[in-house]
Length: 297
Image 1 (cartoon, rainbow, N blue to C red):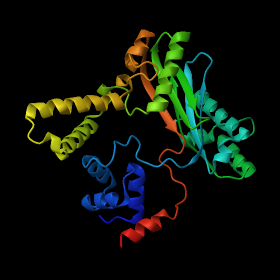
Image 2 (cartoon, helix red, strand yellow):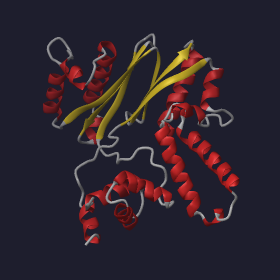
Image 3 (cartoon, one colour):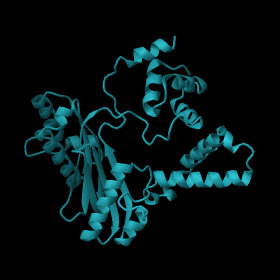
Image 4 (cartoon, rainbow, N blue to C red):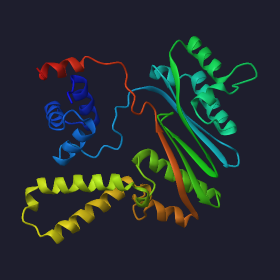
C-alpha cells in the first residue's frame, strides 16, 4: 500500500516521532498507520498513544445532572474558533442541549436534532439560527447519557468533560469521592475501567510490543527465559496501572489505588465517559505537508 506526505504528517502527529522515522515506519509496514505506530513503539521510538489523533477542533464539552443525581448527560459541540467556544450564548446553548439529552434520552444525533429545543424550534433549527447569528459553522458531535448515581465534571472551561456512574449510597462524601474519580479520569485519561475489562486483543498486542522492546534492549541479551517472563509480567502490570482506572494510583493520595479509595467511601465506579473537545478532529491543512513531500522525493 502506497503512502503519502499526509500519512507521514499524521503519523508524526500521532506519535511525536521524527519525520524520517515515520517515513521508515510506513515503508516497513506497507503504509499501514496502525502497524506503523506499533513498529515505532517496538523500536522504542514512540510511547503508547492513548488517543491516536490530533486534537485540533474548537468548541466545548458541557454536562447536566438532575437534582437527585439519578440522570446525567455529557455533550460536545464543535465550532470553528476558540473565540466562539468562550461565547456566553454558545455556552448556554450547549448546556441546554445537555439537559435535553438527559430529559429526553435520544437514541442518536439524528433523534436529538429532531427534538424540541423550545416551544417554537427543534434542536436542528436552533443550531442553524446560532450559526447565522454567531457567524461560524457549528456541529453537535457526540453525547452520552447515564442513569443511576451520576456525577459529572467539566475541566478547563469545557475543554474536557467526564461523567461517572457509581454503585452505592451517594452521600455527600461519596459524591465528593466520585468527583475526585472524575477529575482523575480527566487528568490521567484511562483507557479502561479495570484490568478485567481490557479486551484480550488489546492485551496480546501490548504483550507483543513489550516483548519486541525487550528484545531490542541489549541489556536483556542472554537472560534466562524465566527472568524474561517475570519482566513481562511486571511490564503488563505497569500497563494496567497506567491505563486502567481502578488500578491507577490515586492522584490526590498515592497511598491508594482508585478502586480502594472509592471502596472506603462506600461506592464502586461502574462506568465512565470522557470527552475532550476536538479529540481526533483536524483543522484545515497547514503547509507542513508540503515540507514532508519534499523529503519523500
